[in-house]
Length: 139
Image 1 (cartoon, rainbow, N blue to C red):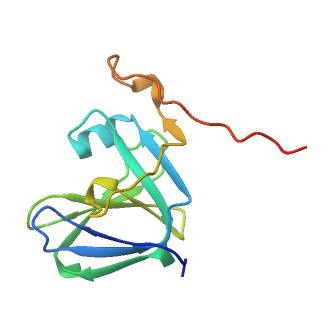
Image 2 (cartoon, rainbow, N blue to C red):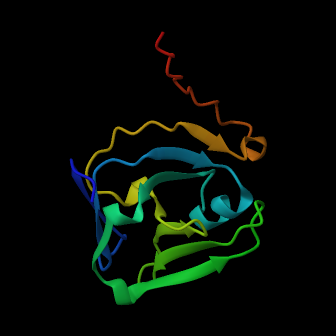
């Protein structure tokens, strides 16, 4: 398990709770139509963690899963949400070992900055480009 900070997350009604150990290894914003529909927003942000960093601590029996197979990538994504309040909680792509967390579910303030935008050709016109800081190569 990752060392460092522990984050606590929950759904809106607080019936389902989880913890995250350490920092995400990637943070992205998705503009695909399915993420927009699932979030009810202009985009969906994902903090990507290893599954070993993620633990459900309460309400696991209340978590409902939807296999989203009609994706633009062609890969099935399992979208999980609280069956009591309907809050989206996390995504599990077909790739084993990773989980995508919705940062809005995390109780503590997060300072993560998106590193990538997916499906930016579907971005709503009023959204600005994100600034991605490139690491400079060391010589």
